[in-house]
Length: 314
Ligand code: TXA
Ligand code: MG
Image (cartoon, rainbow, N blue to C red; front, side, top):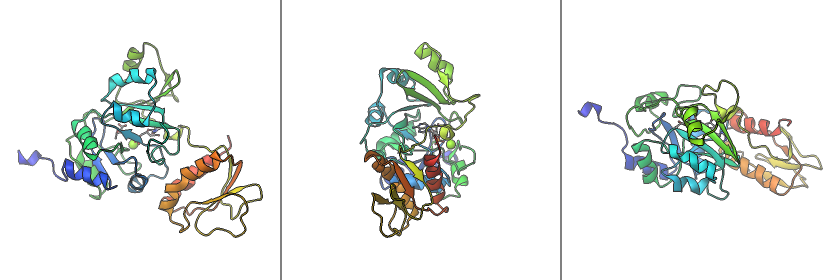
């Protein structure tokens, strides 16, 4: 039987990696996830770098039990009804609890958060052993198929990512994503849990975002964090009525409020600070913000994507 024994790091080793801010792929009943400590922004950034994801899509926070999920999300009675499907292939998008300690790179700066409890003993044991909620997209390089075996994950990332082997995923289709917003229930992504089962539990039909929702990634149409302020991008310096977000060297004689994404022009640090700075300038009531040019390489692509969306007319 030794042929079929899992190879690679064991559960304790994987939990230690995650606690140390490293990535570790792990099995779920849907697909393998590329996990990181959801409270550690540097760890979450490594997910984007490793996947080569050009955008900061919000990520699902994987929890071991309802109590853990309730630390990060607000469950209305309606949302609680849907937890009958947990553990299971259902992701709930709910209002985020403020100051819950999640990295805002997990939520891409949104006020909602996606949570789920996977129905896989190895995933649950790993989350418990790590003692952290795990942010995890599917464990494939961006644009490739979602993996359902440890071998696919290892091959996909050329062996660069440690994988906790839990055998093949049962489903191979990602979780169904449901947003509960007040008394509205909307399916954002069709997935492994059929909508009809959800409607049976609720006793009423639910809305579907977009048409023909065949595993369409909601990342494209999910509301993205948009500051109240108007943004002007690629600005070498602010006009008189603008706050300024600098990157690296700051232009002299800035009179209004200013923030620096990274004084050392480090894209990782800039990504780390991006949403916090936008929220911060919003909270002090800034109406117009000029943003310094950000290089397009590495994480710069994701930063520029988010800035462009934040600046888009609405
Ligand atoms: O089965 C699954 O869901 C797998 C396993 C690993 O759990 N994970 C997965 O993650 O498919 P990912 O990152 O490939 O897809 C998560 C989707 C993204 O399209 C993202 O836009 C959406 O969830 N999402 C996350 N947070 C959201 C939020 N606050 N509002 C709307 N959509 C959100
Ligand atoms: Mg995916």
